[in-house]
Amino acid sequence: MENLKVNFLGKEFKNPIIPASGTFGFGYEFSDLYDINILGSISIKGTTLEPRYGNKLPRIAECSAGLINAIGLQNPGVEKVVNEELVKLDEVYKDQIIANVGGHSTYEYVETVKKFNESDKVFAIELNISCPNVTGGGMAFGVDPDTAHELVKAVKAVSKKPVIVKLSPNVTDIVKMAKAVESAGADAISLINTLVGMRIGLKTGKPIIANIKGGYSGPGIFPVALRMIYEVRSATSLPIIGMGGVCNAYDVLEMMYAGASLVMVGAQNLIDPYACKKIIEDLPRVMKEYNIENLESIIRRS
Image (cartoon, rainbow, N blue to C red):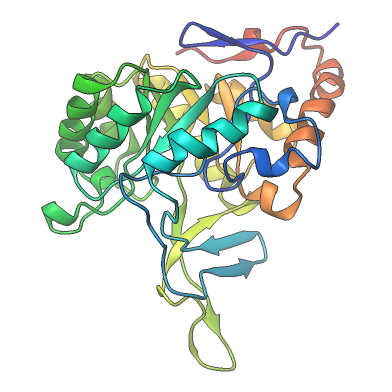
């Protein structure tokens, strides 16, 4: 019988499939569709220190190979997430989850992580460093190695949970970014976040999204994600969570061969809310097709 279990940061996961942050709400919303306890874990909606109401509408534009979104980290704030959203999730999902954290300053990240320290439901923190650094001129934390290093260092100083840093692909050298967060003490890396894209409405001749540009995700970015995961695995020893355009069980195997221990499914959840369930159920068949008995055995380590 095919073994889907994988070890990541000292924790055994029943399978490597995790819905990516921003595509699965706080998790419990999907429990009416299927038993979400089949999931390896859940990366919950990006959370900030204070409530965020997101960007102006429209925020989403469809593409032939994915979609563009500019939601803007809409969330009720970490206090409510810990005291209400995670409580609701615990009623329907019994395993621990990954808390995705965003912010516009180092202070916001640090204080949000401190609050998540209080929750036993949280296994690890995923730092979304693609947020603009308002106190540093507005440039995203994740495009400058020194800025990213300092942020991770500050978060690691207060976090009681493992810290996973989510890397942006919108950089000249992804390896340089990976090494910067590794040297700051990151426990693991997740990649890739969305690429930057836009669409023009032909009736108006203007950008469809009110924010003009947004994050491009979906199957179109899969080869880019795969290449970056492979490069980062070759350059660092940190465990990796792979994501970016994953649509099926075959994609999962490719990600793991490239170096990912766990695999997040993002935009596909918005196209098909049963996507993660279907991938988990199909993995044994695809493993058998390629004579793989143990998923852990195919993870590229260097």
